[in-house]
Image 1 (cartoon, rainbow, N blue to C red):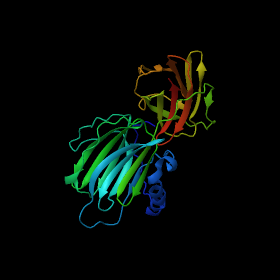
Image 2: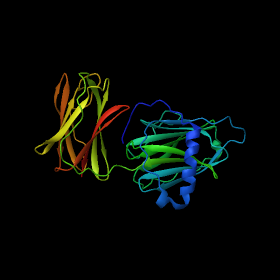
Image 3: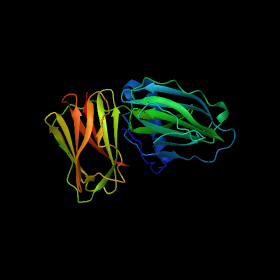
Image 4: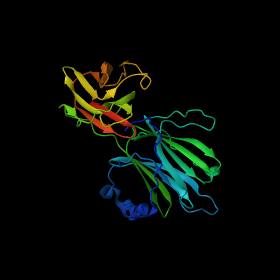
Length: 303
């Protein structure tokens, strides 16, 4: 799923847990079609520190891409020991001089490899035609650190695996969800009277659906949605989701120009909620997701 978000707290994965995964991956490598893993769902940052390394430094000898049934895969071939690394979603990646690196995709995974030989870094693959992974670029190559940005179709779930014989660092990124088909009203449970403040509205184009993301900050215990068709309009009631300065400074009328979604209009706003009207090209199935870190209400509408 999408997302220009605040950087999450790094989470260290125990090496014991990773070791338990290795037999599963190694055995299944010879017959991936029958033993493919399920799509990953995690979006929390991953950081792993290994025991102190001795020379020579590990070398990233190659970067490979592959498509699986439910996810795309990036493989970093490593000559030598597995380096320390971190993988996390970031709003954007920047070069050492502060220039923003343009990326294809609506979300960016930053992969940082530490204490590696940067003098033999391989070329990155060309722009891909994979469902989720749209781009790979280098953004950091300095004093033993290699940084890669992976452009993703959305802020989809990912997992990180360490494989041996030979040494490989593997990152799997889930494919987009299928297009929604149901047109019945959607609503979330009632909360308390706490308000969350709208901070941004984002849109994204997907192969079979368009996406609108309402991002909030503050208490989420009262945030509730009700989404239903009102004639030709798709009405989104954000109960206890308030709009106002200084948290929201964006426009109240948006024209995203997507395949299905024509306009987004903040129709009414009060001290305890907001109503948004979505103008579509035609009535179609939709779904609603409520996501965390940061708090978001997502509406997907099929093409």
